[in-house]
Length: 156
Image 1: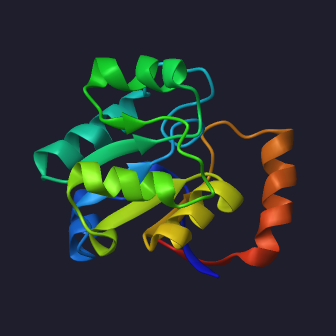
Image 2 (image 1 turned 60 degrees about the vertical axis):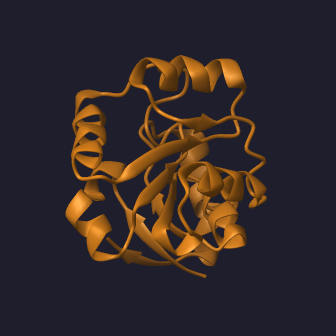
């Protein structure tokens, strides 16, 4: 499967997104926007979210995490979200698209896990970008080794 790959979600600038017809970014939370259990983005992600907003690109968090976890991160930022999204199934992403009132070809799914985030995008007909996790460790290294044979990555 051909998938776009980026080191960090912040590489997906509003200009890059708009040049590809992207009006909405569906982003995983844990290890994509913030580390596990971190309830606020770091300054670079905060700037990136502001740039999206200023340029009319919608952002919605689509996470498999529990409501309490996702709400703690999103509500203070005024971000729409969907918790317990059921990734790698595509139904959660389709729900997010309806809420944002965009078509699948106008959206981009961004996440740090191929077998959940990227597969969900594929199943919902949404383009996807695999990013390196914000926190790397043993599990990331192991998971990425398992994912690599399935990824034909093109750098953003």
